[in-house]
Length: 102
Image 1 (tube, rainbow, N blue to C red):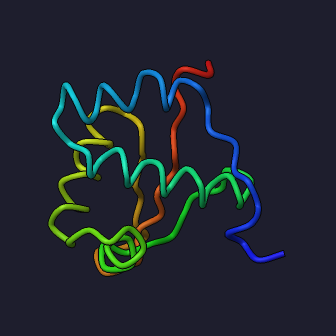
Image 2: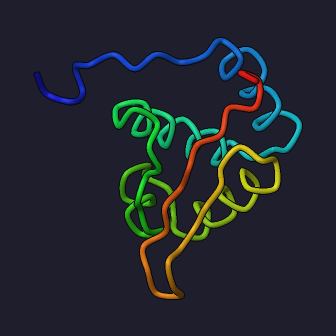
């Protein structure tokens, strides 16, 4: 089955709270879009970290690289995404965090 036909479960918290918080309060709709995209990819990978560069995330979401960079900074500050690199030029691995599930 093609990947776009497999449903991805979305926590109610993401739609009921996080959407309003990121889009309304933080005025960062790009952060919500990047989080939603990373969550979908991570869910398909059984919640393993997602290896994507800024360019790849920009292409995947339709946002500019600078919008993705700002969105990731917001998500990291809000502790919704943790990003690691093996070295300065390595492709980053983004781990989607779900603090409301603790």
